[in-house]
Image (cartoon, rainbow, N blue to C red; front, side, top):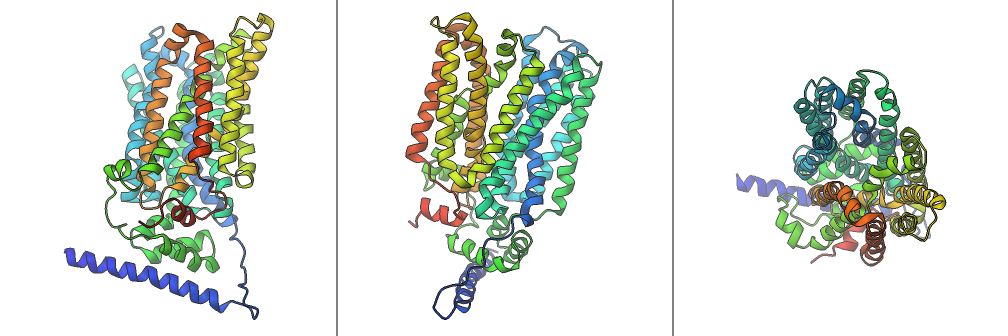
Length: 488
């Protein structure tokens, strides 16, 4: 049995050399008389565009389920008889984080075992079941179980969407396409807020809000059946012919041999082996995993989720309704994300990250200043509200969309899925503690000190990005891998 595996793997290794030789021969055959190679240009972005939109449905669902509880929690607590029980209300809101941690932790294993198409369908399944259970819940326990199931899908979805978009996008638009996932998250969040507006006036409307979310989840599962598998995953599994077919579907025939040759050149031998956690934390890839985990931790330590959480209260103090507050925050988030889409492949990932965290330092500084005794009460509201909207805008320009895309580019194909799941686990853990401790810290140390702490973390993020992050704009995944991890 071991001998058959060795024979199959050695055939796979010989096949990789064949792709390189065939590609080099083809490149030589298209040289003109003066020895300059003819350029065939970039592949059409249109070929992969629809598949990017399908994958982005997972991010849309993530955003929708983040926001669906915002306008509906009061009605849910009344109907399920736990109104006034802050612990129960907190559980309904935060239990998704526990499910998200579980889904994120196992996302790498699921992708490596089943591939992206089946993993997306597995992501959609608990979202369909969980949202249905929440919509029909008669008790608090039923609601919590439904939210926990939805949370596992939320943990899987963003990881899968980011990795899939990275692996199927042409290099020259990969940053733009990577922003689609964040735009989808923003649209999902705004959709849940808009759909939830009638919940306080219309009895039972909150159930409709949960039923609605089952539709895009079902569409994700259906459309993934007709989407191509990641050629990187197929190649890693030794299915070179299937990888060729996927590249042809995504890029077009003239680009297949070149894409396969690049995959072959970056292949280091050992893809057939299982990647162990110890290898990610202490082995050859530990530095890249450390950069990824730290970047995700700093993203959450910037306090952005606390900003989202506290936005309604701040706007209410300014005499603005919670609905208007949510719309303003949603618009700022969407506008920043759309700008990131346009700038990602022009300015680069590193520039956007540095500019984004720097902008957040200024924005959170304005919020801290509004809480000081030096500011008059009339100006306090403007500084607080303006700082909050500026913080959301700055976050969505870079700190929001860039880390997931950047890290999925930086990780070598062999470890990409599992390394992303490890890094996102740090995201969920820090996110949980920020959400858990925010109100207590606000009460004990006050907004001035708390905002100063968040601003400090943003400043640390600027320094960390300058020193450790590699610019990946316009580079193929194989070029990035060779730059970060030269042969030992």
